[in-house]
Length: 313
Ligand code: UT7
Image 1: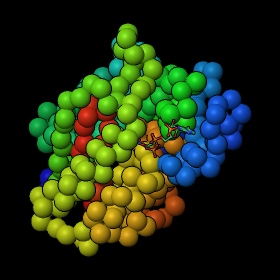
Image 2: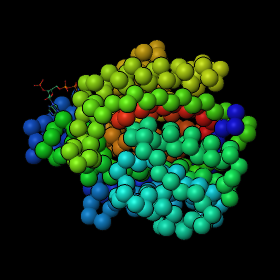
Image 3: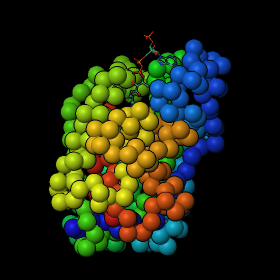
């Protein structure tokens, strides 16, 4: 209980669509390899003038319109990202400026890589529960411009990622169910980048694969235990969209039909903290996710971090 009510969502993808065949023109790779190993067929990258902040602001505007909430109603804005355009101001502050959020709003970024959006939801929930925010609604975002961290000559990483943003407007609902579980395994080797010695994103793909298939099913089970529910009571599993084979392995471990796990990495690649809110927005807008349904969102990624949350939409 003391969960979140999801009032509106939005998403924004940049304009430069890059297919697997486009990559195959400059790299020793193929649509067959990329789609076969990951499910990914295309992704969008920022063109000149497009930024994490412009994507975030566009997704946030849509989420506010969808929720019917004016900027003045926002008490806090939490942006999940590991690829903000600048060190400072934060992405959340850039969204504050672009949308004209009130001066009384608390704005901050969280960096939990691909677990970022679930972490941001829990951060927002706890801050709302604390009772000190000046307005009742929270804007929770995941936004990334990962293309700025990619080595486009490294076929083992650059084909996996994409840029994008997703946003949600939430408020506290004392009657809404909520259960969340988080974990961290401090490890700077398996998945890292963006530092002076390692400017580009680099990873041990197989180790990340194994880590995800080990931790995510256990995390989902722990969330269900906390909520006192079984998987039958959950309508959708919305996991971080890194790789279709990872999601199928998670489904197998949980003895579930993979069709219960939403997939859209085919169209967007891995957009890190943006992947879950983009998925939620797509599912709400195409009628797949209906009001009152129960969802488990689960993220996993660099840190290493993982986190799952059960919520009613
Ligand atoms: O948010 C989390 C972010 N991280 C991830 O999602 C990564 C999770 N891991 C994965 O998705 C998979 O491990 C990969 C898709 C990255 C790789 O799949 P894999 O089945 O584990 O392949 P592999 O790493 O074992 O590589 C197999 C071969 C290698 O060649 P050799 O050494 O066997 O000759 C690679 O060099 O595939 C080669 N390879 C490629 N070939 C064509 C690696 N990247 C490519 C490529 N095109 N783009």
